[in-house]
Image (cartoon, rainbow, N blue to C red; front, side, top):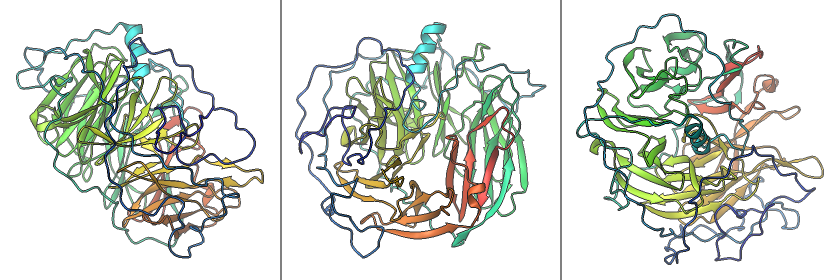
Length: 587
């Protein structure tokens, strides 16, 4: 049950409150059933600390609830008695809690580093793979499936994993001793407000699609992570291969073999058209390749493999600049993307890397015995040493990294994967948004900590999508809510005038781009939202019949907008579903 919001100026406890926007009226909603999660190991919680005074700030936006400028009908407020999203008292910035110092981690391992695997390994017939060594996690908005910490603990307990990795001089252990002290202030990097709008049609027409490969009955499903874009190609990870398609025609231009068991990780970001994936019978190899040519640049066997199918369960990858990091159940490693040089390596110690995110900065989640969690911005050129480190409050865990500049993360608890969205700066909490109960549609995927949907971040704003709900008249209630990263205060709520579903999609020319998906008699459209006022403007509509090609009911299908094209991309292919598409294009 939702907890009542606190009085103004008294922020609620982590994971126990609703956010700034109250839920819509109507019949009581049944609580969403969650998979049962075993209780966490002892040690959660810390003595209460007196927080320091909250930092000042604020961006000078109009007070919440103030009507946006202009006469756009999308942005006009309605009387509070009729508005299900009427403004509640805004939440003040929640100051960083000072927690007891962490016990120093063990020293780095000594010894020689394993030699990187040179060249392309020769693959023969891949042996038939049975069902996964772990149950597939359910994927549904707001539910478990994004954080891997609890499952990781269960596998460690069940398998009694005790992996010891040996590394060479100059390679830093994953716990990065001495990281409790904030390091030098990182160089400020401008946060992207999205690409410049490419020429696009005002009415998007179905262009082409690509049929997904069939999945054997014994395999049940196959995850197919990896989607990248160049000016000419859209490149998709598929079953046992990576394929580039011409964006205009959909014709395949190159195919790169990547045989795998079917649930290997792929890095979201790229560097100078270089991308990276895991592959192999147990996801035990990493490959870097050129998106423009399909040529493999290098591959390496990951250290610590025992031959078990579960050696590299819960793997994830991230690219930031010329660095690619790989993190898995019992270890982690960082490489120079261009040269394959090993930058750091770690094993399964008291504190271990438990999540990577790339882009403007390399951000790491560190898990210390499932009792405390840290977020670190690291310097890959200094053996992965932390520039700064922030420790999450006791009883919470860090389950996702939404943005690396600014650093924005999703916190959860043993009972919920998504309870708070927190902005961090130089090792301190800058702002916090409480997600409440089933209020916002925060979707955490299985492709690592960076696989987050329906949450967008610009330099100074976090945009959350309200979970769609029906009112007593059968109309859809949905919207986009903007919060300041500086203090966590709500700026505005934008909602479709015709009460349709809406979800945040991307940024175009400094504007937020959102999707109103087609459905039944609703044609659907893309709209832009002014980041200052919340005013909506039509960007492009979908042609009649588009709903026949846009299937977002499968929660592993995701929308993308790139270079004037709208795509629906699948992350999972199921056995027995002959109608699934890897890609659907509109332009």
